[in-house]
Image 1 (cartoon, rainbow, N blue to C red):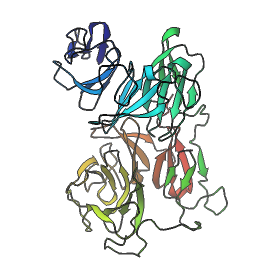
Image 2: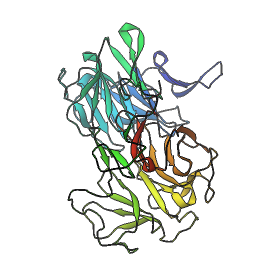
Image 3: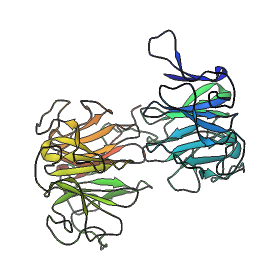
Image 4: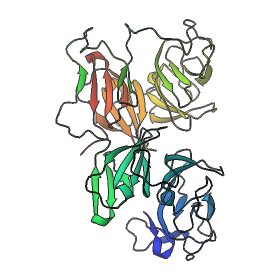
Amino acid sequence: MYILDSSNYRVVRWLSGEPLGFTVAAGHGYGSTLDKIGTSYAIYLDNHSNIYISEYSNHRVTKWFNGNHTSGVLIAGNNMAGSTPYQLNSPWGIYVDANYTLYIVDYGNHRIQKWIAGVVNATTVAGVSGVAGSWSYELHYPTAITFDQHNYMYIIDSGNNRIQRWWPGSTYGVTVASASLNNPRGMAFDTSGNLVVADESYHRMVLFPVTCPATTTTIIPPSTGTTSSWGTASNLLNTPLDVTFDGYDNMVVRWLSGEPLGFTVAAGHGYGSTLDKIGTSYAIYLDNQSNIYISEYSNHRVTKWFHGNHTAGVLIAGNNVAGSTPYQLNNPYGIYVDANYILYIADYGNHRIQKWIAGAVNATTVAGVSGVLGVSSSQLHYPTAITFDQYNYMYIMDSGNNRIQRWWPGSTYGVTVASASLNNPRGMAFDTSGNLVVADQSYHRVVSFPVTCRK
């Protein structure tokens, strides 16, 4: 546990069960030199245990590297209150994403600043600099910020006693919580996807199920399609393979026939193993640059097709030959690409999940036992899909076992989160309410499981 001991101007780490904590950042009194901190209301711990401190009175954010509490490094602001892109005015809450991009609640300027590591100037991603207001595009003394698994930004708009959700790239927010708040200050998601708010002046903690359905009355997971038959009617499906969602929670199903006309954005030169062609493929992934990754089942590889180029792809995983070595794949199926462009592959024929860092020759196995199928929690049986939630928990469609397994970061085994009445499940995706929606192929339906919304 890390505690911002604000009156002592330090950050203390407290180990579970220990009677005393120890200082891990600052602790040299109040001040504006880099060995001290000023009045501060927020910290953030990154995945390397480096500590970011938002210094309200010093109008800056400092980074204290793990193991060094002698002095911090200035990473945002210039110690002077201001509204220019390189300045802050009484910063409050902070958030650091997987790319170490820093988001700062610039309280005194009524804005949210996005600060890319190493850059001199920030960009405003929410609010109007220096203008307090209650319109959907304005903020009034914001105090906290966080993100969900869909990269939606949540802001405590303290002066307006509301929480605003901003979609990626949006120019305005949508109110998701406002009832009976009085000077809200901090917030965090719990493991069920609820947003828990510190409501200061009402002396309480309030829970809002902002990413969960308002009510869940069904015991059997809600579904589209039926288990009894397939068909062409609007309420039926025929062996659905995959599912995904757009930003409005509209479901997009990959149908095998009957699609309207489109235009080719990758491949389209027939079946083959040369890089201008693809083989039998069951999964694609679109990254944030609109590049397309294709998991080629019959070619035992994954190719990347850069945006705007459908002439030829680039080989990024596998070697066109079925195998179980770290540089090979055997009938790859589902794929996932994270914010660092690390590729995760459901290596169907090898009963494993492979993690492939961009540019690396070899992959590492992060789930399953290579070449061994099984039903134990450490094993997989023909996995077909993979995705992640906002806590970086990995969800694997363990098709041969008709179950979905959740693996914690670094874990050597999975936990079953869904298995009821599935028959040859293939694809899955999270919707914007935190439900895991599954393409249940042999039952000709799409099923929703509230796996991150347990109440």
